[in-house]
Amino acid sequence: MSTLEVSNLNDGTTTVATTNLTNGSAKHWVRYNQSTPAINSSFNTSSVEDTSTGKITANISSAFSSTTNYCTSGSKDSTTLNFTISPINASSYNGYQRNDAGTYQDATAFSFQAVGELA
Image (cartoon, rainbow, N blue to C red; front, side, top):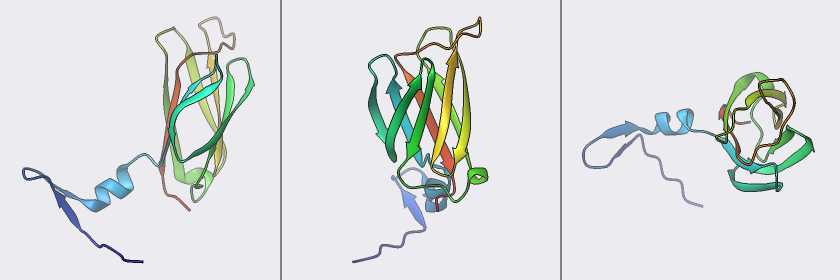
């Protein structure tokens, strides 16, 4: 196998250090439709479990180095839902969606990403 070592990338107008790409990129993301349920698109995602109304567990294919070495963020569809993300371990986390009354509710677009240090 060949190895290509590059310290900078240039598109003709801007030069970027490759460390910005490797350290600053999302290492996992998933867009999930809990109503179907189905993964619409993903990267480094082995599966998503629909655990109950408004609750999922996302499983990451290539784990992070530890639970404390990654962080997650997310978004939802256009309905008014509040969401919470809670890491379980280095390769999975729970996602929760609630309406303003605090009742768990499914959404058609439940999107998450995680950044951090892979194992």
